[in-house]
Length: 299
Image 1 (cartoon, rainbow, N blue to C red):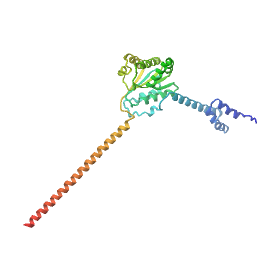
Image 2: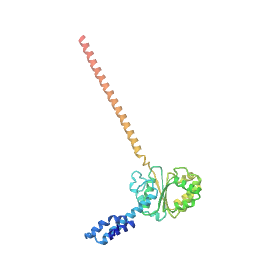
Image 3: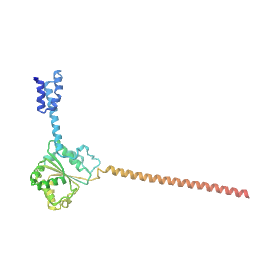
Image 4: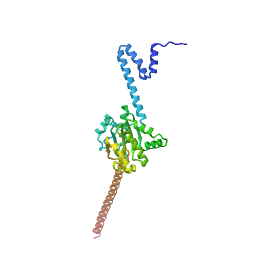
């Protein structure tokens, strides 16, 4: 049996084909509002299209965040600035404006493990992705493994082109694992391709003065640093590891408890000792009194 579609059904079908999911979902509500004269047709169409655009924008942002390869989702608001007083909060929060991308500046986060370098790098990267900048996160070790594999398969140029095309490339944990001379050369090629074209974020636990040892070649280390530092923001983070702060606190608490127990034990010992002294003192007094009494009676 053949059924003729009315214009309402045709409209719903068209919205589905056009992938206007939110409009299709809310169209009935707005038709009712227009019929009741609670909304004008123009207002209804404006609100429907605004909702649709917001939905598509959120989807696009989430897609960019997903393909960026972040190990977890962290924001700058999640960062505990009170635990790391060496960090200038205003300077970090200003990075949300993404002015560094306009100037193709690099960001280098240097500090010992656990101070929050990766958290900050991810947070900045997520802000970039939310603003529709192509973003990619990768650890230094994984990056070098992929570049070496591409070189063996004669695909190095393509791989370098891919990594150099991101608006923001985050290379995490530079220096956490040994870097061979060949690896240093591959990293230099990538940094050189990105130089003054796109921004790169680096996190490292190694100070710049030791990068020659890290890359086993002072010349390549200086060449890499020359390109990274030319247009850059350097953030040196000093302080304790955030990851083990609770364990340290628990250790301190346990130590305090142990000291308290020791003091209580010593107090208990002293109390017992005083009690014994008093007992013997009373005993001697009583004994002396009794002997004196006996002597008087005998006399």
